[in-house]
Each structure stands twice: as C-alpha cells, then as structure tokens.
Length: 412
Image 1: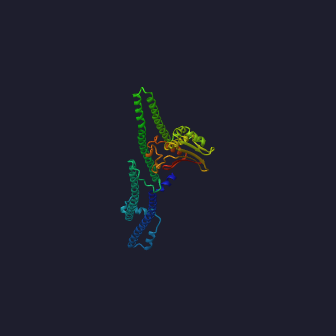
Image 2 (image 1 turned 135 degrees about the vertical axis):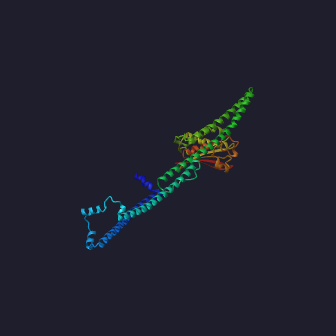
Image 3 (image 1 turned 120 degrees about the horizontal axis):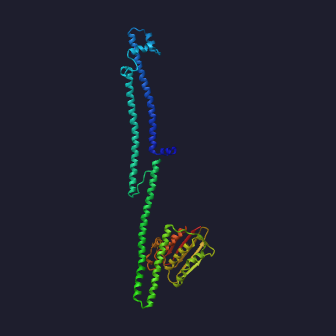
C-alpha cells in the first residue's frame, strides 16, 4: 500500500492536489488559532464592558470604590450570591438573548465562524474542482486517442510525459496500440503476400497445365503413332516435374517462413557437402557441355545442417547453369579464415544487370533477360532463407556479360 501511494504521488496532478491539501491543512490550523484569539479578545472586551457597567451602577448608588473593586475581583461564589441572582432571573435556564454580554458574544462568534467556514469551503471546493477539471480533461484526451485506436488510426499517442499510476496505464495502453498496429500491418502484408503468391503460382502453373492439356490432346489424336506418343509422354513428364519442383519449393519456403524447420547442425567437411550438392547436377552439366570446378582445402569444415545447406548450394549452381552458355564454367571455391567460412560460386555467363541486383532474391522475380530460362524464380529466394536461417549471409556480385559470383559467408 505504501509503495502504491508513493508511486501515485509521482503523478503531477496528484502531487499538486496533495500539496494543496497540505497547504489547506496549515491554513485551517492557523485559522483556528486566529479564530480562538479573536474570540478571546472579544470575550475580554465584553467582560470588561460588563464590569465597567456594574462598577458605574454601584458607584452611582454610593457604594464605596473599595467595595466595588473587592466585588469585581471576588473569585469565590457564595450561596447567598447565587440565591440573589436566581431571584433576579439569572440562571442556567435563562435565554441567551436576555443576557446582553453573552448575546453579543454569541452573535460575534457566529458571524466570525460563518465567514471563516465560507472562505475555507470556497477554497477547498475550488482546489478540488480545479483538480477534477484537470483530470477530466486528461480523461477526455485519453478517450479521444483510444477512440482513434478503435477506428484503426494509431498515429495519436496517449500522454506519457509525467510519472504516476495513470501515466503508467497510458504507457501500457500505448504499447498495446503499437502491438495492434504491428499486427494490423503484418496481417495486411500477409494478405498482400498471399495475394501475390497466389497470382504468381497461378501464372507459373498456367503454362505447364496448358502444355499438359495440349500433349494429352495430341496423344489422343495420334494413337497409332508410337513415336509421337513417346515424344509427348516425355514432354508430359517434364511438365509434371516442373510443377512438382514448383510446389516443393513453395512448401519449403512456407515451412521456413513459419519457423517450423529446425536446422540440425553438425560438423561437415566442405568437400563432401559441396560434392553432395553437385551430385545431381553433374549429368546436366555434361549434357549441356558445361564444366563444374571445385577448389578448396579437403580438410575444411563447416558447422551447418548438411541437407538444407546442400539444397541452397544446389539452387545456386542450378541458377549458374541456367545462365551460362555451352562450354561455360561454374567455379565453386571455399576457404576458411579465423573469422568466417566463405563459399563462392562463380560463372562466366551473361551476368546480372545492375537494376536487377536488388530484386534477384525476391520470390518469383524474373529479369527480362531470363524469361526464356527454366525455373519459377524461387531458387535464389529459398537459398537466401536457408543461409540466413543458419546465421549466414548470401550476397551477389556481377559484371554484366562477364561473370557472376554468389558468396556464402558463415561467421565463426
């Protein structure tokens, strides 16, 4: 409780209001002191006036001055004196208005009490009203900001310039609004990404599906020509393989984005890792008249997930094969330094235009010069996701018409 009270005091408005109450308490105390002093002085004045009237009356009746002084200074009451006053009507049941000194004192005290109470009440109500007015303005401001949040506008911010419980609450609400804004933007980006992905998938599947339909029609119309059937059956298999590769790449990228893949790292020899990545590409390279060269220390190693890293390397080499001509050379080299393991894949193909460099790792991106090459534009994006998922860095450098180098860097 004490800790909560200490935190609430940090609120500027609460601090000012408590300071006002403290000042009001001191003012009330001093008003009481002054009130008592004034009433005492008033009672003294009235008693003296009453004594003067009694002395004057006795002197006018021939009573000696000594007897008058003795009577006025007498402190003890006698039964005879009390009986005499009672016969004259001066008793406890006598109404105050018939006792002139007391009536005068009572009127004076009531007036002073009323004025003091009125002044202090106005001061207290004014201070409390001002505090409530300030707090109500703060609440109205907060309600306006939160109404903007409800409508989806997260640009306004709740006041957080002061300390205290209410401002801590405002800070929490503002943090919640920031989180909701981030979620809203993420949802919008997800919808945009889903829309584009569906559009790209539809575009990528349109060609092989149209080809499959055409091949099927040709084979149905040529049932007596085995050579035609064989040719278009082979083309049908290629189209189906292209669709399978596309869907498999999309599945892998989706799993990486969702964080459902855990990289199982182990110490791998780079020569064996790269050899595994190239195992399914050597036949294609030979068939296309291209050369795959490997260069690096046979003892060099890398801590990584061998299956996924080989997948990323294979995609980069496939990209190099797609963009080199017959007799082209793809050079895969690796080296280990005290700071990092570096793997580079260099080809002497067409190169990449400078305007395409910032976009080549985007999904489904195809440059104007690569429209005639096979692939769906997912290989480089998948490789980048795999490398960065293992805390690596994938970069590219290209000289158009001369060479292109993809570099994988794994900090140690």
